[in-house]
View 1 (cartoon, rainbow, N blue to C red):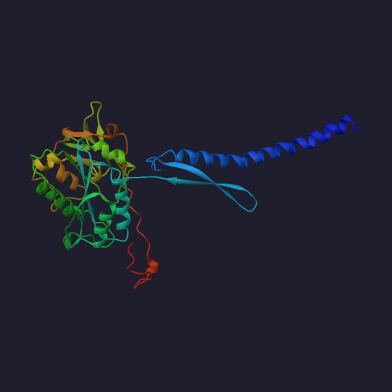
View 2 (cartoon, one colour; view 1 turned 30 degrees about the horizontal axis):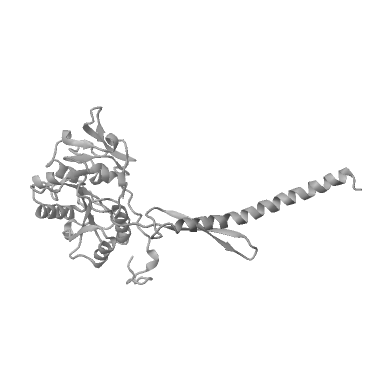
Length: 338
C-alpha cells in the first residue's frame, strides 16, 4: 500500500495541473458564448442597426488554437443635425485664402461645424474667383453654406512671411459677408440669428456655439493663445457686467478682444447698416473695436462661458509645413490636391 505521504505528494502534484486546465478551458469557451449572445441580441433589431455605438466579439482560431477577440464597431451618424424651427441660426463667417494647409484647416473646421444644429457657414475666399478646392470641399461637407469671394488689394496683402500689424487680414472678406447678410435678410425678418466670425485656424468647443445662441446684442468670452498670453478675457464684476479687459497688448482699446471672442445678434447687424470693419486708418488690433463701437457700449456686453471663466476657443494655428524637399520644380505631383 502506498504510504500516506506518497498520496499527499501525488495530490499536491495533480491538483495544480487540474486547476490550470480548468481555467484554460473556461477562457476558450467564454468568448464563444459572448459571440453567440451578441448575435442573438442583434437579431432582435428589425433593421440590424442602432444610432448608438455598439460592439460585438468574434472568435478566431489560430494554429495553436488561441482565441483572439476582434472588436467590430458600427456608428450610424446623420449630418448635419436636423434643422430646428425653434433654435436661432448661427451664421459663421470665415475668411480664407490659398496656402498649403488651407484644405486641412477647413476640413478640421467643417468637422466641428457638422455637429452644430441650425448652422449656416459663410465662407469667403480671398481670391479673384471661387476655387475648385473650396467649392468641392463645401459640397462634400453637407453643411448649409454660402460661398463668396473677393480679393484683397495688393497693397493690403501680407509682405512675405512676416505679418505687418498695420495691414488688416480678412477685413474685406468679413465685410462682404456682412453685406450679404444685409442684402439677404430684412430688419423685419422674424428669423432669429447670431453672427460669429470664426477664422479657419482656430479650434472650437461645441459648447461655445450653444453659449452664443442666446445672444441678445453682443456676447463675449475668453480666447486662448492670443496676445502672448495663455488666454485673454473680458473682466467681469460680481454683477455679471464687463468692466475691462485681461490683456497685455494695448488694454485701453475700446474693445480689447480677439475676433473669435464675440458674437453679434443678427437683428443688431441689420439695424446698424453703417457698422463694418474699418480698412483704412485703423491700427493693428483695433479691427474688432472698429466694428463693435458701432454696435454697442461696454455695458451692453453679455459675458458667456460662466462669466468668462471658461475657455471654449483656442487660437491654435496650424504649423507651417516644411517643404524644402520639393525643390524649385516640385518633387511630388502638383495635381494631387492637399
